[in-house]
Amino acid sequence: MACSQMGVSLESVRLTLETDARFRRKCDETSDVLTENIRAAVYSKALKGMVPAQALWFKQETERKAARQEDRPLSPEELLAELDRLATAFRSLPKKTDSNDPV
Image 1: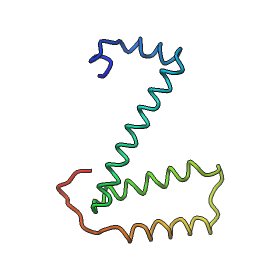
Image 2: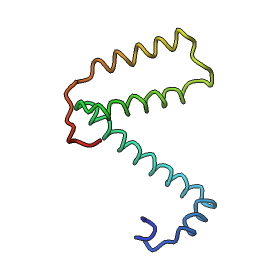
Image 3: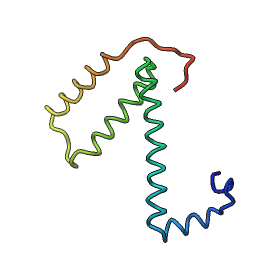
């Protein structure tokens, strides 16, 4: 969509991505910024008590944390500690929800 708005073909973008490292980095950075904007919106909704946003936030954070860790399974003790940490954090969230406010 952005390409057509600027009058640039997708093929031109594809070729530039393949051959221009700086362009490729800038595209990656843009994607990262957009992703962080969405994460911030979900976080804001979660803080306001939206249960679906809270569930999504915890799922994403668990996945992000797992991706940062070594490629090894958690020990039973580590798993229980992580579950306890998540349960404590979840219990501390506000319980008020607004079912008319989409995530």
